[in-house]
Length: 161
Length: 295
Image 1 (tube, rainbow over the protein chains, first blue to last red):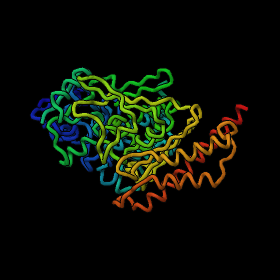
Image 2 (cartoon, each protein chain N blue to C red; image 1 turned 120 degrees about the vertical axis):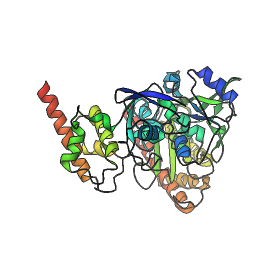
Image 3 (cartoon, rainbow over the protein chains, first blue to last red; image 1 turned 60 degrees about the vertical axis):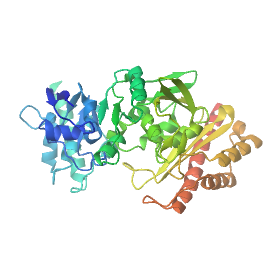
Image 4 (cartoon, chains in turn purple, yellow; image 1 turned 45 degrees about the horizontal axis):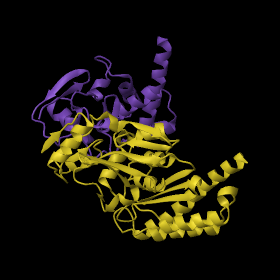
């Protein structure tokens, strides 16, 4: 079947999609957006997290046909023009990336958290990221990155006002 | 395989009647795992995402009508007051991403004994009904008649779950779940408990410790008897350790768990007794406070 939807603001079209195929597969293999990672395929790890109509979801658990005419935003869509976006830069600066496999999901989930709650407590951060597994860093650097992103975001909002 | 995308509820019912083996998919948090791992290849997927009324809820005459696809995250945000037990259970489902997609309809459709919503639905009382619809009409299935076997429910092949009717809580409700960590955990076992002061009843629900979610009937009757005989609904006085202990033992006796990868039958029985005592203590303390502050 054919599936058409919006990915990071641009219309995309995927052909010959198998009916049981996941959104994650379509993104990675059919529309050239391999940023979202395929790790567990059962919603345990969060590496494939994307926004679907503004809500963070595991793209491995969304059937491709379910996104027809809907809006998807992936880690590739978190950039600020040609530059890294605020959350992405904070992860680089805090050294929160080791092998990098979990990072795209953490970035999307962090972006969603800070959107909803710009100054989250540590408990809020842990709760928000509880569905994103990292096997390398032990989460401390990730916590640092989220706090850094939060501080920068608040600063930015402060200066623009 | 076919992918059916009805735009309206009537179209969905027509599609299910025409394709009785089609597997409904909403949040996809169970169905897609089966697809990805090639566990199950249905003849068709019946996507319910376009049917917006499934994601709506309303309250009429003290009863919540909860759309089958209202995601757990919204149950937590919007329904913690009228449905505290279910909201607590919802909070233990998967992760934030999973809670953004999954809903009670999927738990009921899958009818896994480990589904987190079931103990809360059972505890909410005997007036909980699953609204099952088909082109033939609508019927309300009492929750006590809904679960019929391991991952089997009493839906007919042409039926879809439209909503669940759950009475608004009239007393404290609790939910407790055992797992290896706080997130992304299938229950080793779970227990839901609710006090219903209006009709002087209590509700229980056991998860992951029998072929189906089930009620601890004798435990409920024992506790109701004690509360009635001693006038505790009116006084809100202490229950005493003997009553709490006995209640825990009766809940434990109501389970028929198995040994599996998540835990042993013995552990499940033991932890059920602990969860029953704790949830009873928590809810009764809350109830006593309400009585005292009203006095």
